[in-house]
Length: 288
Ligand code: HEC
Ligand code: HEC
Ligand code: HEC
Ligand code: HEC
Ligand code: HEC
Ligand code: HEC
Image (cartoon, rainbow, N blue to C red; front, side):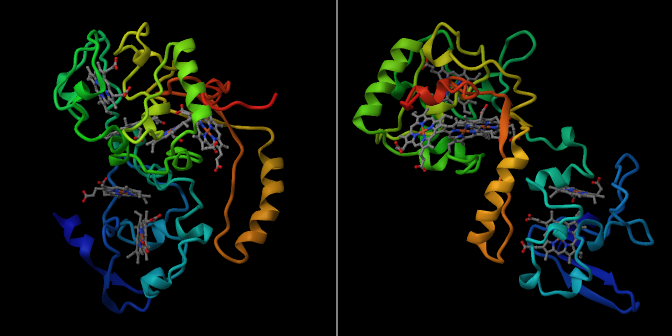
């Protein structure tokens, strides 16, 4: 394919009309290709005279092709045009249709009739289980230990406070967790070493796959298609102004860091709601 060739080596004509070969960083997006008709580029994403995407289409750094890759400052806002972007995918969707590029959501297990495809279960289980049966932990036959299953597709630090939670709760908290499990009819499973893991807080299945009357089936109501949605909070600017000064002090002249204070609007795949604090209170005891 033409793109594949363009991937490794490409011809760039400079303003002086001299022609030279330029390498691209590994796994970099292809260049010198024409957007298909259906693709709508933002106005400031300029094309070359042949209507192809070039370095300047995506990068707001002048003559980026002449700078050694190691010296390109990836932290300036315009490194990606009209940036900075919270996630790289947000940038991709400036040109690509989001719905075409979303990964298949494997938690979305039930079809409109409430039926499921056993193959989908086998992403995580060696063999599809029966949602109406009771199983011991050993009988779940997970392809990987539960604590390593999720980071296969998700980051180990998918959100603030995830990574520092993967520890062993002390005796007092353990007692509180057991009491919460009984009182609220939920499970808060720990890994083989007794540590918190992703599925301590998260359920793996779409709501309804496992009956809500079973502890493993209890989870928040939410729209899997929509996913987790945060909304801007009126305090955001106050929060940022307060934090920004301290952050700048900490980071000196290094990469600017921006924190946002955002509120959860809708949540999915959680055993209890975090919006109202119920999840946190299943383990933590806060002064009131
Ligand atoms: C379709 C958009 C697009 C085009 C066109 C494009 N880039 Fe990129 N470039 C990206 C994205 C996205 C990244 C990765 C950003 C990240 O990792 O956050 C990137 C990363 C880079 C990096 C940093 C690599 C690293 O990891 O250190 C360099 C250097 C770079 N591009 C140079 C170029 C050059 C030179 C051209 C033109 C020959 C070019 N890019 C064209 C989108 C593009
Ligand atoms: C400036 C617009 C633009 C941006 C931003 C952009 N792309 Fe593309 N991308 C294109 C065009 C144009 C093509 C080639 C035509 C097509 O496939 O529609 C393409 C093709 C692709 C392809 C197919 C490559 C092939 O060899 O067939 C993939 C995969 C891709 N882009 C992923 C991404 C990802 C991931 C990002 C974000 C990091 C991104 N794109 C950002 C314009 C863009
Ligand atoms: C993303 C990975 C993943 C997928 C996909 C998945 N499961 Fe699971 N499943 C798990 C994990 C992890 C557990 C154990 C969680 C725990 O310890 O509570 C589990 C536990 C179960 C249990 C035991 C519940 C209980 O009562 O303790 C059943 C039944 C089950 N899964 C059925 C299914 C079926 C049926 C499918 C396909 C429609 C499926 N799973 C797809 C990860 C997955
Ligand atoms: C085979 C890959 C795969 C595995 C394994 C997997 N996930 Fe996912 N997960 C996805 C995809 C794809 C989505 C849809 C959103 C996206 O593209 O990030 C998703 C969405 C989610 C979401 C909702 C985020 C949102 O905004 O939609 C949560 C929470 C989540 N996964 C937790 C887990 C947990 C916990 C495990 C381990 C039991 C797990 N995932 C295992 C691929 C996977
Ligand atoms: C202490 C509880 C807890 C643990 C442990 C935890 N999470 Fe979360 N996670 C949450 C909460 C709360 C949210 C936000 C609300 C929601 O999911 O609906 C969240 C959100 C997510 C999202 C969506 C993020 C977004 O912004 O779109 C993903 C993906 C996710 N978690 C994956 C994981 C994975 C993978 C692990 C294990 C490495 C993990 N979580 C560990 C509580 C936890
Ligand atoms: C499954 C039990 C569990 C749940 C649910 C849980 N936590 Fe934790 N949390 C812990 C453990 C264990 C620690 C580490 C020991 C400690 O600091 O007490 C911790 C530590 C923390 C810390 C200190 C982090 C640090 O870096 O020192 C904060 C803040 C926190 N949790 C907030 C929350 C919030 C907010 C929620 C709800 C979204 C939540 N936790 C849900 C068990 C849990």
